[in-house]
Image 1 (cartoon, one colour):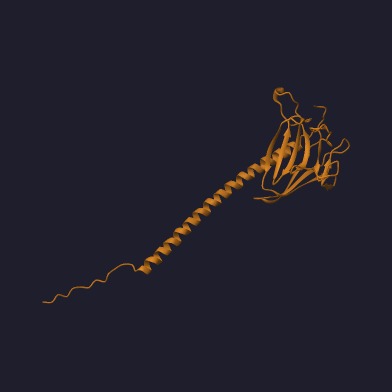
Image 2 (image 1 turned 180 degrees about the vertical axis):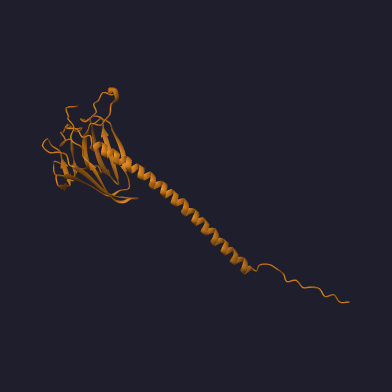
Length: 220
């Protein structure tokens, strides 16, 4: 007696099908990794931009505070030379040359009365001499606790902005924007100070600051 059995076809994937399946899986996995990295990068970029915005506002507040507390007091540098006035800066000095030394470019310098000394704890007044400088791609605030400084007088530095390009400054004197300014007894402060530069994150920036009225001097 002859048995008639059923023939079952072998079920499975061919090599081509497996290769195609692996390719599809690879594409899906890669896409997931890319999306995840983009999400992480976006979060990192947002955090970086937020941090920079905060630092930007702190720097603006510091410049604004300094310019609001200019004192009517001429000072001497470490060589005993009398400086042009309680505020000066821009393209030219009193000598007609650009202010550049050791890779630094002066934006402006002021005598400020905002150096707080609670309870006269330190042997100094509230006056200090402050310079705003361009050093490479940075704007730096350099301050001395004593307005008439000597060579050994220590200074403190604070970097306000980094990664900048095309840093420029102008002063609103009367109705005109000037590339330089030197304050004298008969010359009022500029109505405003304009800083312009290209920021690595925020692009081209134009920052305006009001210069406060000269405060009474006589302090040392």
